[in-house]
Image (cartoon, rainbow, N blue to C red; front, side):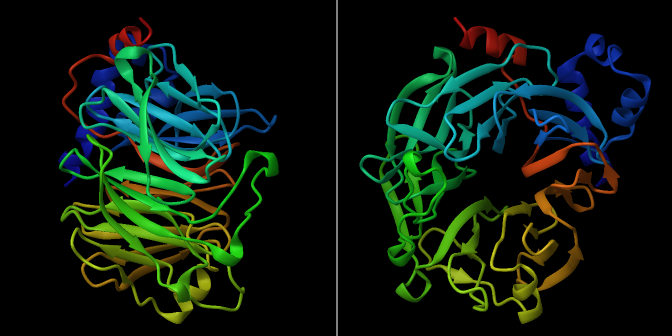
Amino acid sequence: MKTNNLIDRRSFVKMAGAAWVATLAPRVAFALERADAVFASGFMAPDGSYGVATLTEEGEIVERSLLPARAHGMAFSPACRLAVAFARRPGTYAMIFSPDGTAEPVVITSAEGRHFFGHGCFSADGRLLYATENDFSANRGMIGIYGGRQGFTKIGEFPTYGIGPHDMTLAADGRTLAIANGGIETHPDFGRTKLNLDYMEPSLTLVDAATGTLIEKHALPPSLNRLSTRHVDIGADGRVWFACQYEGARNDLPPLVGHFAKGEDLRFVDLPERTTAALANYVGAIAVNRREGLVGLTSPKGGVAVTLDAKTGAVLAQEQVADAAGVAAASHAFAFSSYGGRFEKHRSPVAWDQHIVRLAEGQADASPERALRSSQR
């Protein structure tokens, strides 16, 4: 298992090149050499500026890039070896960058009448970027399509078949998008205010990325209409895991985590009451460790990180993590971060943002510098 994990770090170093590694401070180069994997996450610096950093599995920062505003979700494409950081809702920017810092980043802006919802993903070949967006005048969720060969300009869009889409991910078939429609109406004129809490419409949809056609829609039952479906990840068996944030009474204990596969109904995990209470009606991030069959959850409101068995839903670990933020698959199950600067056992003088992305191995058809250069033509 250790050897497989080292591929991530070695792939990253190979991608960056010896010349880039030689520019690192000795302490950072040593940390990178010892690392099993490399991750990226948005952060806020002590002076209030925002950025995105690559860091080792132990939490050592390797490289930083500035961002125009606060980031939220991130995605990485092993095919083109580019990453993207999306602005926090209702932000209007996304920055596409090479994680090793060897190429100038590309900053894109949402179209008029749209704003980003903080998440997106690349196509399987890395040539397209999909982003969850709000068509706020029509109160409908949209997926914006951005072409890498066109400088990541917008080349199309299709609906999410729901309201307030947040997170989404691409299935292993390279074609099916799993989308969490949070069901909450917002409008940039009102900032982050939630406008329809009495009649929310949360749902999860499967959409054909090639055609924009709806494959399946799973609306939550009326009794759970205040349970906003927010974040998703997919297991090795193709099962979609989703995590929720509850907009109802604080003393309610609704189910917060569930899963489904194509052709199946939604199923919620029956968590122990102590775990549900610890999550404080708010799961801020979810990740699946496909190799080990685990599901990781974090709750900044509850200050807790939870690990589940993907087959049974049983709670395998529950750890207090003050201001818990991101979670990503790691060699030892999961890496967790916090708003307080913690990444695993290491603490940096930054506030990590809500999500982490693992920069995994992949077969690239172009160097990141060449990919960005061609996107700017």
